[in-house]
Image 1 (cartoon, rainbow, N blue to C red):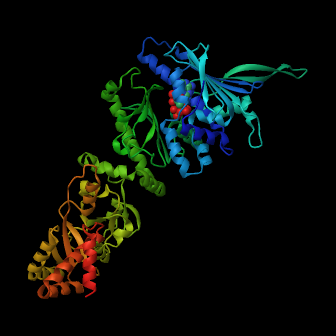
Image 2: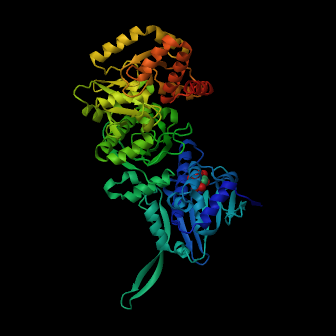
Image 3: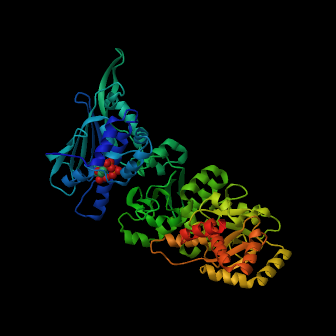
Length: 625
Ligand code: ADP
């Protein structure tokens, strides 16, 4: 019976079949990688299930070419697929990698992506007019054949294949104007593809190759002889000396194994001997995975014990703040047959994790020091996670991370480290100034910024929602306290100015008290000398800032934590005298002014107005007088 592909699969297939400029070669890497995974699965099952017997020495992948029938066949003796699995795995696209691909389809040019990104089994349709998948699962007594010519759908029927594993037969397309499909029937072309993309596969990839053999030296007579050859070196990439591996090989491995469509930003290799003994190959992606900041994202490194995969994503190997790192770890210190629960308690695993963490830290420090631009790109993608790490767990890890985080500097107009800030502090400056807001532009226009800039002190502009929480967790850096310049008690005034403001506030205490009463939700109203040209600002008292209040308000359970706000009025601005006059002569208009000034201050701070209509009417009242 003919069945239809799910609709998104159909779309992908269409793209696949009709893409002309794509690097079609990648299909082989995809099929070999699937075959290798299937063998891994079988082997792993045999470790935990005594009924399954596997001869370790016979595990292999075979590639056969038949020029007459135009077929390229890839056979593995892995776990195989049941009828259901054939249907579910090959009839639909549901895997994370494929989903990411789907998301990107609309963003970039379709063809571009297929070229860079392996999309698994489907890619074989780029070169095949028909595909047969014959498979017998380790969990079934029967074998089945799945068959499809592409978008028209697929069919599944019983088969008499009697070996456990999977045979994939590709019926290669005829040459056309755009592509030499015959290449895929050429032994040496295929052999080179295997070497290029799949050399590290741990199981032998066997091919029958035709060798030209000299049979008669005198007559110079040659004879073709067929010989089976293992084409790959089988040494996993992480076991090779990094000087023996090309950048391309690392990149291809990453793209293949971690289903990315872009090469990694950084490759981190390490071979450690000592308290912990292991080899690792890690990558920092060049962009945030689409699900990175969701709960679906699972951190972890693939864990191998003496070359055998024992856990696909071992979360215990990575602290949360480095959860963006992908890669593999291979150690001889770990037992093969081991459950997840026991593994978590293994001391060796903890030692490896510690060593890995310090390796990643060191690499990031070096990148920051020597490849600033790259580090900033990295920080744009994953900086939030590092800052989150600073304040998470009550700031337990802040000392490890404080030199890896960057903030926007008003003076430099770019990202800087805290140590760079401290180094460029003015002689008479004893604190690190910061202020938070929605965007650099908006912060730059905050009234409070002006006085600090006038003193030529640098200010860190915080625009990420975690920033202020991270700063609060840090409390200080190199003995310098962090000061939020939108707090009401920031102290930059001269003694003379301070004296004048103090007097002003005292003399007008009734006015200020009445104004506070009219406004209700401010905790104080006062005159200030810190605003140079601006009439008003809204500052805060205590630990909760306005930006933090916004973050709390946006949380799903709507935590009712409010900032204590203070309305500050510039005592040197004409408006100060105006309200003093009104207070004496026209209490009604004074109330209106109070509300308008407070609304102005709220707007500047990026807060909404409870009743914009009322304020708009008040403004009209006042200006039409
Ligand atoms: P991915 O490899 O990203 O999961 P594929 O489309 O390549 O996506 O394969 C889909 C699924 O089909 C695999 O996850 C695996 O379960 C199954 N599969 C593919 N090839 C084989 C094979 N040779 N042996 C057993 N299962 C396979």
